[in-house]
Length: 136
Ligand SMILES: [Zn+2]
Image (cartoon, rainbow, N blue to C red; front, side, top):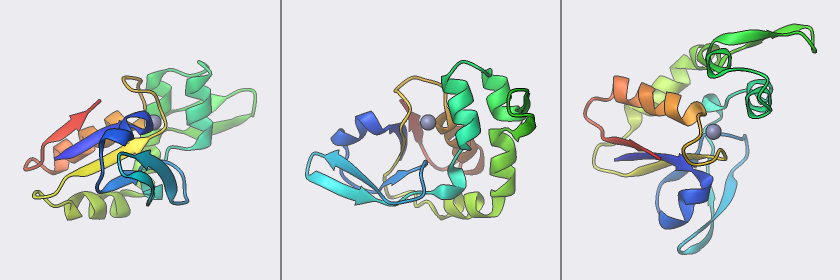
């Protein structure tokens, strides 16, 4: 099973936690203490789209598709373009997921909030019909 959740929920899980944001291994508090987990940088959204979305400057559609930032004076690629750029690594990861193992994919966004977690979950469902993907 693939569980895609907020970092805030991670305490209930023990194994195979990987972070979908950030470039360094991230330390989390779990039921068995503080643990360090690897990151998946190829799933990272850009800082531009994350901050613009969290600040209410762009829509979900712009987060995904990209937008022209008039304050900064340049075009900001959306999350789909980032996944496209990293497609080989993303697919390699998704194809490598084992059906007999649980994985916990986390990011820092709040539970229930829109973010790239939902996109990743959707992509895994699309490419791996044999896996159960749970999001929360
Ligand atoms: Zn997120």
